[in-house]
Length: 136
Image (cartoon, rainbow, N blue to C red):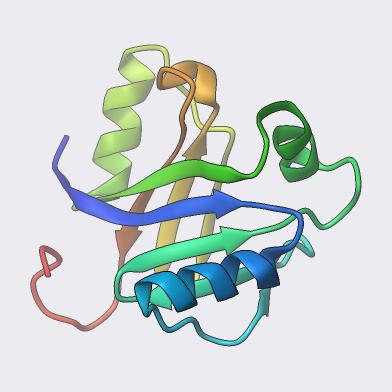
């Protein structure tokens, strides 16, 4: 599998505006405007460094249950891969299947349950946009 690097780090919290403000204030990170994922989950993204802050869409969804069990904070890591189909095939050969796959805005992603990766929610992401070499 050709893992290029870390695509983004994901944080989860109930008050994502407060989390965004804290990161922005302490680390001088600029976040874009709020985004609502197609599932209704609210998000904030920072492009440099690539950070995603996400909150629950509903009081009992996956993110809410995670926060209830683990508290707010680090939620998961997305790794950028050169070829997601090859990565998925390699993981399937090892008995590891994704929770779901999605393709949004020229990014093909596959998410994996934390039980597969030592308790960490992992996403693999392949970008299909014209930035040249995918290693940048």
